[in-house]
Image 1 (tube, rainbow, N blue to C red):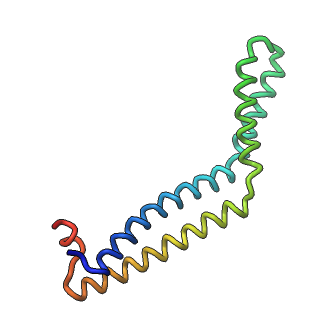
Image 2: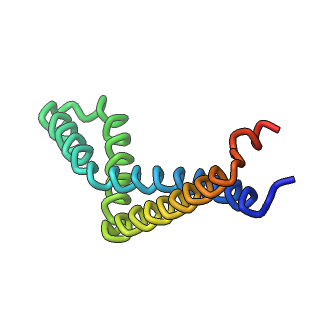
Image 3: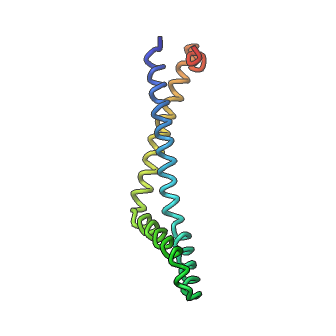
Length: 122
């Protein structure tokens, strides 16, 4: 039977994994926002090539895909950068705090001679 600290450690470990995934997702959203200008430049270059070629009939499919990509860029660009950054940082701080608490519990349990890895294998 597990003791209170061992149960707490197991719960914190689950929450740590969940927060790690949330941090990765928030980081990806932030990075996407920061790098969206590359996509916008590429869209404009492709559109300029279509206009220069003056071959509009064959380029309708390309124009549709450019329109979809442009709408996606616009949707991403309208997000609030400060909120994206705050969300990412808040999740990181919460995850790191939980990681520190897990380390404290592991240290206390190891001082008492109870190894979590041995308990997990039982």
